Each structure stands twice: as structure tokens, then as C-alpha cells.
Amino acid sequence: MLQILCLALCGLLTCTRGEPRALLRLGMDIMNHEVQSAMNESHILEKMAAEAGKKRPGVKPIKGITDMKVKDVQLPVITLSFTPGAGIFQCVSTGMTITGKSFMGKNMEIIVVFNITATNRILQDEETGLPTFKSEGCEVILVSVKTNLPSNMMPNVINKFLDSTLHKVLPGLMCPAIDAVLVYVNRKWANLNTPIPIGQMGTVKYILTSIPTTTASYIQVDFSPVVQQQEGNAIQLADAGEAPEFPEYCVEGSSQLLLSAAFLTAELALLQKSLDFNIQDTTVGELPPQTTETLSGFIPEVAKAYRKPTPLVTQIRINKPPKVTMKTGKSLLRLRGTLEMFSAQQQGEAPVSLFLLKVHFNLKIQYSVRENRLQMTTSLERLLSLSRKSSSIGTFDEKKLTGFITDFLREAYIPAVNDVLRVGLPLPDFLDMNYNLAELNIVENALVMDLKLD
Image 1: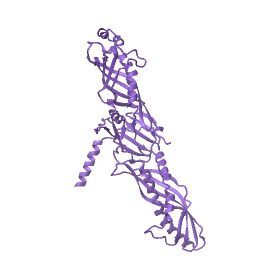
Image 2: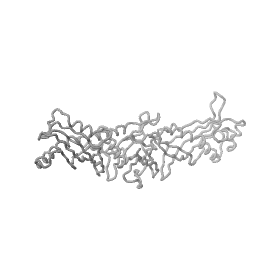
Image 3: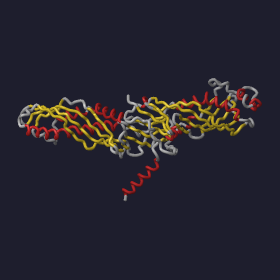
Image 4: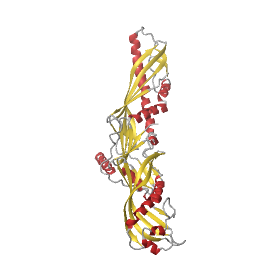
């Protein structure tokens, strides 16, 4: 009964997570690189060979051979292939020389070439929730054997001795090498679901949606990222309709990371308050002086209220969460809020509000990667709507301000937004991935990063 209840709860939790909002596709390019790197970093075959000649408590010596030593371990050749539904089939081709005293009392030297094969199954660790590889069905297959023992001397006995000795020695000696290499690979997932800060506003944590799946061409890891405010509240990811998918153009064997527009929207929600600005500089870029005199050219009522030029203070507030949208080749950041203009007063006096406008505008986003963080640089795409909410200078046609406000957003507000966005959005930390080399493509409702090796 308890087991059924646990399964039901797990199913409920899975449903509340919803569709994956970030997808990782690991092709053979990255897996080859990681397994080879782990083999090189661990020096595992050499270590195993060194251990072979040592006397270990509880391990009986091999009958018929004494003073056994292993030397001249060949540089391994690693061949990998995906096993659908399981993980990766691994074959390590190598060789070594085994020396010792034979049962005949002579110095013996055996040069052996063999393959170590195993299936490295990819799982989800129950305690950490991280992806993890575990080897199964390790076998050692002899390819060739050469010995200095006389071949014409009791060949059947010698062949039987060599066969039984090698099959006794090699699996126990070499199969642990596969497990030891996977320890190195698995360590490189260790930081994956560690919360990563976005400035001082909150964190992002990459949580697995389910056990990674394997096809004939790749391993796919699905994430339901958790975006959390600094005070601990999680930001709910909006329902973006159909789950994002990798585009068909992806080259077989290559690796990609897909980030949905809904996920990027949730991350930018952390920065919403940082997009509020009070701009009081009278000189801004190529704009005319930001004074009541300039403003009166668009709104005659201002000239009646302010006969002398008075500096303007512009307050922009984003009162709805920013929204990222993506169509093939184009991404926009949609902002909705208010723009209020004040006339600056003498020192010590509060500015006086002239009018308050509701604004709705789109910024075009260009994506890049710097220091393994996703960077966004924006430019004004267009001002979508402008409507008057209140005014202290009487009624006026706010549409006449369209050009003035558009120029102001472009010259004064957008540079400030880009400064905020320089904090960058964290990318999943796995397998020591260097994202700085990635090629970025905007597809329907998602950003796809084609991952490249150093």
C-alpha cells in the first residue's frame, strides 16, 4: 500500500513540474570527448596494471604463475555507440605484457591484446537527482596472445593454461577500470542542480524532469528549471503551449542545448524591478535638451504652465513581468508599464508630475555567450501603444508624443536596460562545458545552442 502511495505522489509531483523548459541533447561528439578525457585524467589502466602485481589480503595467488607483473600498457582506443533505451555501449581496445614465473619454472612473458566491453547505463541518482552513468555486463574479450613459452612443447596444456589464467586475471583487473572512469565522468555532473545566482535578485536551478532517454543518435536530458527570487519565492513558468523541440537541421552526432522562451521569461522576471529607472539628465545622447521647453513643442499646454525652461525628470516603471517571444530568426522582449514626466523643482522640493502614460513596447534581442552565461543586448523594435492615464496640465493628444517618447526610449532607456542585462543568465553546469564556442539559433519559442568542443 505504501509503495502504491509513493508512486501516486511521484506521479503527482511529475505532473506539477509540467513540460521540460530546457532540453539538453548529448551527441557522440561530447560523449567521446568526455570518456576519453576521463580515461586520460584517471590514468586508470596504468593504475590497474600496477595493482595487479601487488599482493592483496584475502586474494589468492593465481595457480601456476608467481611473481606476476604487468607492464607496457598500450594507449587505449575507445569506441562508443548509443544503445537506445539504455545508454552507451563502450569498447576499450588495449593491450599489455604480463610477466612472471610459469608452472614450468621458466620466466614467462605474455603479450596480450584484448577488448573491454560494457554498457554504461544512464540513470537518475535517487539521492541527488543528477544524471549518472553505471556500467553493466563488463566482459574482456581476448584478441591475440603471444608468449615466449615454446609452442611445440605440450601445446594443449600451455594453451589451456594461458586461456584459464588470462580469463581469471583480466576481468578482475580491467573491469574495475570502466567503473573508475565513470566516476570521473559522473563528477562532472555534480554542480548541475546547484542554484546559480542571477545578480542579487535570485537563482536558477536545473532540475531533471525525468530519467535521461537514449536514442540511436543521442542522449536527451529534460529539465524543469526552478527560478527562485532572493526571498525564496519560486517564479511560475508560464504555459507556452506545445513543448519546445529541437529543430530538424541538427547534425547527427552533434550536441545542443535548448532554452524555451517561457524559461527565459521567468528568469527575466527576477530582473523586473531592476528595469525601473528615474532619468533626470537634461542631456541624453543625440536628443534635444530634456526640458519643458522641448516638451512644449509637442504639447502646447506645457508652455502655458512653464514659461521658463525647466528640467524634466522621467520615471519609467515596468508593472508587468517582461515577456520573451521567439519566432524563427527573431526574438523580442515585450515590456509593459508606465512613463511619468515630472518638472524638476528647486532643491528640496518634490518634482511635479506633468502626466502619466501607459506604454507598451518591444525590444529586439540579440543573444551571445560570455563567461558561460547567456547575454542579451536589446534595441528598440517599436513603440506599440501609448495612452494617457492622468495629467496635471489638462487634456492633450498623447499620440503627438509618439516620436518624442520613441526617441527617449531608444537613447535613454534602452542603454540602461542593457546595463541590467549584462548580469547574464546562467547556463547548466555539466561536463565542464564551454558555452563560449556555441553557435546560437532562434527557432519557434526557443533558443538553440549548438555546442562545440575546444
